[in-house]
Length: 174
Image (cartoon, rainbow, N blue to C red; front, side):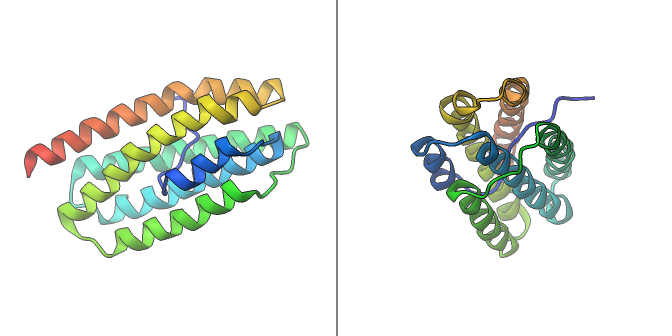
């Protein structure tokens, strides 16, 4: 089984800028992780059903599969550690911005949809990697939570590179 990523393809700068600007505890990190995954699952589900590109649909389905798997792992770890995810400004922002992103994507069709979805994936994965490195991993107090975040980081990088390649292909085709 591939190592899934803890990420989202929602919107970027504001949610992840706020996580690095605030001090977060393990319960808040758990909420950010679960929310981020769900937003990416929702965006991927939309893209898998609406994209006109076989490659974009396959990428979107990969995002759904990976993020669904990691949400299961994150929720199981939170239960094991007796940590209840705590809502916070970043998780609320992720959820709201993810909904805005999906609403925007729903207004697009064809190549415009595909490019907008993949562009968002590229930008968002970079923001998530930055948030992991600067805020989430350094702030995780529990060793198991920190280990999970470190373990999935390479998958973020792989998703980012996959999305960049896909975007280059879409741009070349048009």
